[in-house]
Length: 338
Ligand code: KG4
Ligand code: ZN
Image: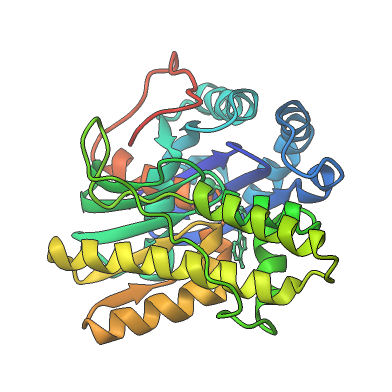
């Protein structure tokens, strides 16, 4: 049994958690969304400063909630990549300091590996192999999970991430940041067939591309053109219908690729993660298609889908229990493949 304190500061959440293997003892998430809302998106320097101001309190809260003393902690971990460099540095430096101070092993964790491990927190009996569909503000990936540390990326977005597309479409509909939850809400009362939008076909693999790659920038541009045309005609924007049509198009595109990929690779479980896993359209389409194809689809609770440190601690516990550690000279990387 391995108990880990982990820190996640790759973007706009200051998160600290304590996890024993797949059991969460505490999970503190201080969201910066209100701070960034006024700018319409995440401002990297503002994020770093906010992490600095919050990190010590978040660590103290996580320790208090878990009701453990340092002697019970077997290792300290932090997200080291990918993400905003200044933001990552705050969490990584705090984790290294704690490791030195309390004489514990230290481990840097890849953010996407954390998102994969999030599923174990609500499905502790799950074991590889399975397919992970990660859909967040920064990533859209289909990953074959083979075992701890052994992953194969089978599909990615070639341009915008799914959540990024939601945020950009919300911005052009003047709905604020983050866009996903607002579009999801408006889509409930809109007609998903009101407008036909492109699903974003991509050319066949080659040149480093994968077979199950997708693209969302064409869809985003199509929504922009639609809005411009409707505005030119002087109509009131049918925001609900645009939201519903856009959301359904994204959901169908992701579902199609995830199901095809799972079937082709003989993987009977799809574990979904990332903020867009909260999307009601994606949940509905993917669940229906999975049932039709005798596949199991797992949607963890939202608190483990969006950025959190429990998922990082869970991944770190698995690695540390296998004797994996990182040197204290480990740095951060803004981009790093899994
Ligand atoms: O995983 P996450 O919290 O952070 C990243 O690692 O990026 O994902 C944030 C993204 C944002 O783009 C947000 O708009 C999107 O998840 N999101 C949603 C929903 N809730 C959050 N997108 C669609 N529908 C939702 N209900
Ligand atoms: Zn994330």
